[in-house]
Image 1 (cartoon, rainbow, N blue to C red):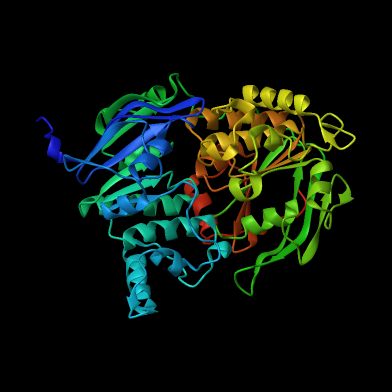
Image 2 (tube, rainbow, N blue to C red; image 1 turned 180 degrees about the vertical axis):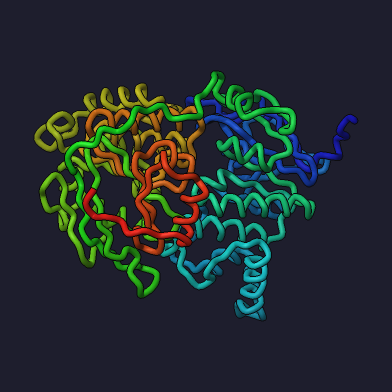
Length: 516
């Protein structure tokens, strides 16, 4: 049966969007049916977020038209989008850090009684939505104090609170745990059943196969095609997305662990959110030639552990021994100079200076070295040459190469820039937190091979990941963190994903030996 034009709630027709040096969308057409979950798939920098930002009014198209229910509409800003009942959960959340969860949800549509805010009814409605959709939040917590997973839930509740009909999810599962992802998939299916229409940007092919009705694929800004999910496979989708076959397994030889590089002794880190400690008396080692992974559900102390290890937070007890030296009270720069690299969880807050150029970001932790400065002046040519080398080596895509402002790059390419900078420092210990967050299958394959190459060259790798597949495929040893404690040390070759899930949920625990 032929689809009638009015079966489409949204039509984006022949959309082109040009930025300096780059055509982000090149004559793209996307049609969203009423009540369907429509996935938008493409590599990092393929133009997915740009296309959705046009629909949400953040950008204006260079050419092309948008129709809603068959009528042409002008969406000049997000308020216009909200008036048309279009809502969006952004890849990098649009939340006010110093406001509470509740204040962020009602921001812009605050309920008032006379001249006064009337929050009681709003709170009840938010808690009812939270219960209905299984999006557990603390309405009084400050955004600056909660995990990225919690921020994600706040964004979704913000959209549900406004009762939008068209829901755009930009990389919604990039920061969620496997259990939360399962929950979100259920929520999306229920919303579609209630008649909502969902546009879902993702790189994760399993999720598309599980939840989407149809999928539109973009490559380098161009429209490649739209397919029915029931008639396709993961392999076909990945080939359409990157233009080549992609390997879904990590190719690595057994680990050959050497001497200890990092020794964590009885580390305790206080929590910023409650009176308990976020990290409670943990001890373990990481050796040369192995990838040790800290697995756990988001919010169980991993973030605080990494911040204390890398110098962003203070420990209240315990010791850090790095290559035989006590670095417990060393500064971030001292840790960096002594051979520790850090791929941070939040690339915007701790990984990049967004308004600096790509080349400035590439030398952020090395600009004082003789290679890049003389008598206090930066050697711009040397910085440019170094940055160009890394851009080529790690396939970092941007409109104007080294001189691109990092803010204007896609999230995945920002991530690749951080990974290039941190690995190229040739560290003795690489601390990689969610290194493949928001990356496409081709880029994930490359990053995993880089982590294994670091291990095989005799470096120590400490991976912190919420992705169960990544934990099982990449690590040589898994340490499970639950409520700030290490509750299990597991061999990925000896356990199942289900068993790992039991440890992560606190249903199973063993003593973890400090010495390995």
